[in-house]
Image 1 (cartoon, rainbow, N blue to C red):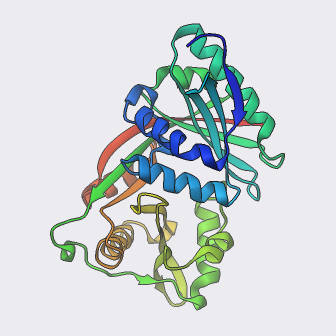
Image 2: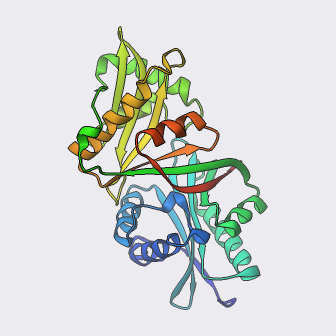
Length: 297
């Protein structure tokens, strides 16, 4: 890579080449961005990015050397939440050239993000030392480690008994209150989840006397079609009663038997030892570990 780089905002016509570039970079732990790791193929990455782009939820800046794509940095955005989730930086460079190009991409990206975005989060593989150091050097703070777990479709779905039930309207207020109390700083409220529920975005609950004791939110990932456990929460006075396990097994039964997904994934913070033990007990295995960094302004 030389100094003759041109930077510009990505257009929809760029997504095919960009998705191939990202898929290749994500196959290498030292350059992997966990948040943009969608499935295991260029086509899966493309389909997810195209859907986000058409919905106005994706912004990318590209670096070209002549006609050759040599760098990219982007963000998924949620203007309502005022947040963005970074993808990259991806660069074919080394040393100071990498640092200068990454800095230029970040400046351009910040300039084209919606003004409502006031928080950016990055999730890079722990082996991506250069990328993690770059964010820390540019005003981001380290939040902690995160782990990506996954479980493949089993030979027999009967291994996962369905003991929880889908959320019904009568339990919606209790569900929303429990979610907001369990995840008070997350990107979406309980009411926001309720507004999204549908065939690809599902909620399961365990309840007693009209009150939700525990819940799980399950969705299908754009592009790959894999399953995602978005949220799992159990009321503090209902823990250690098998409710979390029952919710997980019910969701896995739905994912594999009803939706036919090839794999289910979830992300958990490093300090959630009990949650990690629960996930491992129902068959989830560690796939990646990443560093979570964040910048607010």
